[in-house]
Image 1 (cartoon, one colour):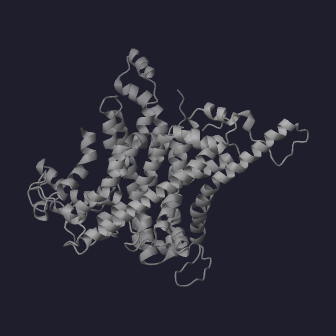
Image 2 (image 1 turned 60 degrees about the vertical axis):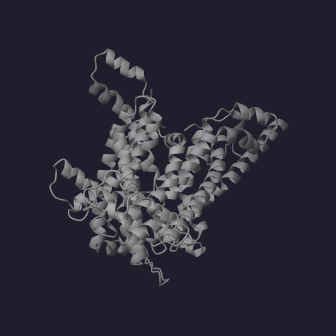
Image 3 (image 1 turned 90 degrees about the vertical axis):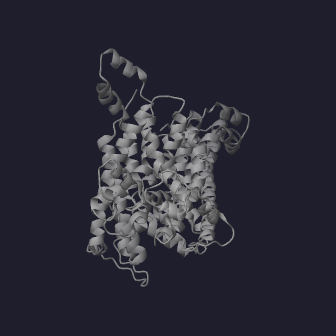
Length: 320
Length: 269
C-alpha cells in the first residue's frame, strides 16, 4: 500500500501550534487543516455505514450471544455460555458444524486446485483469452440461488444429466438419488455447486499472480535444463503464494458461510444444513435470537481464525 | 474445452430445459437440445395477462422489477460513497488514515452472520423491513468496503501531475476530483459499479429475512419460494431462472474486462 505523501501534505500535529510560523507557513497550515476537515467530511458517509451498519451490529452480536434474548420478553440477563450450550444440545446444530467444516475443506481444496489448473490453462496469451475469461467468470457473476436451481436438475434422479452421463460411460447401471441417500455424497455434491460458483474468482486471482512472474525466470531455468515440473514446483508455485493465499481466504470465507446452495437443494434437511442455515432456522423459525447470536458469533470467529491461519501458512512475501 | 464445458454446461442445460414443454423436458431419453422448440414458458412468464400458473408470471415480473430497483439503488449509493472515501484515502493526508483504511478493508472478512440479526433489528426499528430502502442500505453497507478498495487502488495508480497543476492554478481538491480524477477513472468506476450490481442482484440471505412480500422481494427470494414446494414444473422454473440471470449475465459479459481488473486490483500487495 503506498502511503507516499508530498512534503506539502505531510501530516503534522495540528494540536501543536507552530509558534515561530512565518505567514507563508501559516498559510500552509490552514490549507492542511482544511484538507483534514475535507477528508473527514468526505469520509463521514463511509464512517456512518461502517460504524452503524457493520461494526455496531458486530458488537451487538458479540455481546448478545452471552445474554438471554427473547423476542417476546424484553428482559435481558447475562447467562454466560447457556445460549451456546442450548444450541449444541440440538443434534441439528452439532451436525451443521460437521457439515460446514466438510464444506469448507472440500470447497477450499477443490476451488483452489481448479483455480490453479484453469489459470495455468488460460495463461497463454491468445486471441481467445479475453472471450474465454468472460465466459469463465459467468458462474461467479450469477445469483447462487438460480445456479443451485439449475444444478438441482443436473442431480435429478429421473431426468438429470448426471445419471444419464454416468450410465452412458458405464459407471452406474441404475439411476441414483444423488442428494437423498448418502450424506457425504450429498454434502460433496452440494459443495460442488458452490465450487462452480466461486472457482472463477480463484482463477482470476491466481492468473493475476501468474502474470507477474517474469518470463526470464523460466528462460533461465530452461537454459539450465530444468524440466517443466521442476520449474512449476520451484518457480511457479512459490511465486504464486500471494495469489493462492488470497484465493484460499476468499474460498474459506465463502464456504464457511454457505447458505443458498443447501437451502435450495435440500431445504432445511439436517444432513446438509450449514451453520448459516441453522442460524437462520434457530433465529427465524424457532425465534430464539439468543442462540442465533451465539451461532453467528461462532461462524464469525471461525471465518476470521481460518483466514488468519491460511495467511500464516501459505502467504510469503515475494519480490521480483 | 474443459474450462468451457465446466463453465457453461449447467447454464446450457437450464436453457435447454426451459425451451421445452414440460412433457418434452420430463421424458426419457433426455433431449440434449430442445426439440420440439417450445417458447411458451417464456411467453407465459413475460406476458402481462394473468397466465395459467396462478399469478406466477406477475409475481416473477414484480420480483424482477424489485431486483432491478434494489440493485441500481445499492450500486449508486455504494459507488458515490466509495468515490468520496477512496479520494480521501488516495489524495488527502489526515490523522488515523491508515487505521480507518485498514478497518474498512478488514470488514471485508466479516461474514454476513456477524451483522445478520442486529441489522434485522435495526431495520425493523427504523420501519425499513419490506422496503426498497432497507434492502438498499443493507446491501450498500456490505459492498462499500470492496468498492472503496477497488477505487482506492485505481486512484492511487493515476498520475498526480495534472491534479497538482490544477491545484497550483487555484482549483479546489473537490474540483480536481470532479474534473480530473473522475473522467480518468471511468474504468475503475465501471468495475466497482458492475461488481456491486452483481453482488446486489445475487443477494439472498438478507432479503430473505428483510422482505416478506412482493412489495420489495427480489427475484432470488421469489424463485426460492416458488421452487421450495416443488409444485411448479421444472421447465417453467428453468425459464424463470434464465430470466433472473439474464440481466447479470449480460452485464458480466459486457463489462467483463472491468470486472476482471477490479477483482484482481490490489490482490498482489
